[in-house]
Picture (cartoon, rainbow, N blue to C red):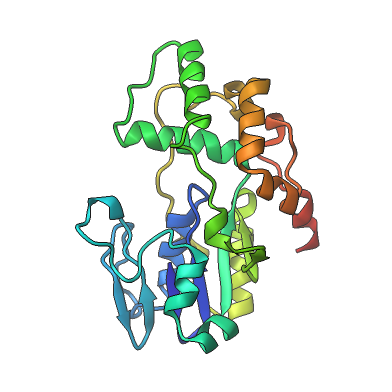
Length: 236
């Protein structure tokens, strides 16, 4: 998560939505010009703003005050009330089917399992993953109770265009050439289209866990259209 006092925004980092690339890009609003910004970083909190710890919080003895993927309620509680009220709150949103496949590969990169060579076996492993507790939604990062807190949504499906639009709204002059690209999947079976991973059963599991996202943004309920913008994107 980020807070920039100069540009008056709060960035809430969602999970497997292009959030690391986006957060590193917007961190330029807090750092000195020309500063080198990388994906892993320690927490900082000073007059320029806040940069949450980016890394595996579970490996720390105690979580820092500010860290990546913080729930919106926790961020609100720790910020001054006028900052939460007045600053523009920004976050990334992604098609749930596409996100589920990305989360599956993240588990593989983390060493949670070996990827089977046969795609039929990989698809079965994916099915078990999306039905397990290891696959969770990120509603708590963008909602407080029934309230959706984001003022600006960056859709993964048009990442650069939405980042550019938000920069204009914030008067933050940062060239898109500085947008990094992290965590691209190049592992076994990553050439498969998103819909290839799904059966009706696994699609239903994702629809159940990510129902709030389908309902709010109008993403297609068919995994074959996982790369397309949701219906609500036409309004922004």
